[in-house]
Length: 425
Image (cartoon, rainbow, N blue to C red):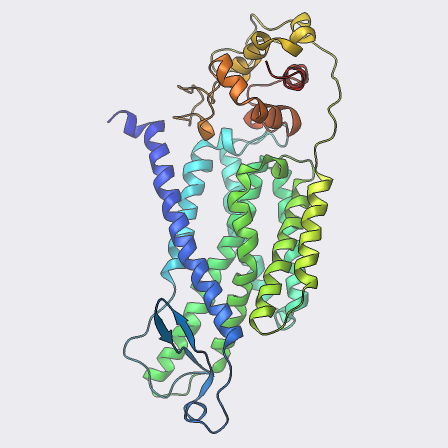
């Protein structure tokens, strides 16, 4: 029971909530994609047909799972309110709630390790959490006000303004929080906009339509139009959010000095590709959009490719204590570094001092019950097994150790680089 209320228990909570977030996210995104596809794919009934007289604005025949389906859309509402009416809302609410819980479990409960990078900004844990929460609330307020402004009547202009503001938020966050935390909060901000659309615009608008019919009144079509606009916004937001959900696995993006610009470019590529599919569902094939998206992705990949490593002059390095926090002691000397191209022993000293507080069978860093990603670096064989990962994260990306909490020096990174490039033996 002791373990369940410590880091090990938090790890299980992390697993289960992340699993829930994935399941509910699939349900929400699937429903969103389906209804946008349906809106673009339905065709109006023949003039004068029974469907047209009944107020049906479009219908579609489809086959799936061994059955035929015939969904129909009414321009405003049917003549009579159905007794059994399904509402699509809990998928969105559950996705946001589980995502918000993930922010607390992974980032806010361990803000000193996961959100703060002293090389970026010297914040306290409370300040970092406040920046995160303020981003979510502020993002929704600004977005909603823009949608209700005259810009709301100009979709292309509004979309451009929103993109610029999201990239600006990414710039501010990457200059305030650690790279991973900055990216995830841009995604959480967009996700909050999406669920805000459902909670404050789409569902209330649908309730207005239903209430009018229950009172025998003619529903005002403005509510349906507003809900449709916000649904389309959510559709375009989806690919950027999905990208950010997996971005923590790809340090080459969030650890770059221009991480905010990289995120903006990749999000733009996602929007272009999504726009192609939306047009295609409506019967318009515009290959220029996916081609532009792919070109943008290739350009980003080329632009951030690791440059050839430059040698760094060797300097004496202070060994870390048991937690890897820079105590004086038996550190590898300058001579060790100079000859370490083929010396696993000297490299192991650095890895043990700087990396093993997290990447160990029994991590000593607070908040970690097991080695992140299952990467353990306790023995020379384990270090050799993960040599390529160590080289990529510590030498090329320089995003590890996390926020450089254990103060790995350039000389130590040089040692690892020389060792790896000499064969990692």
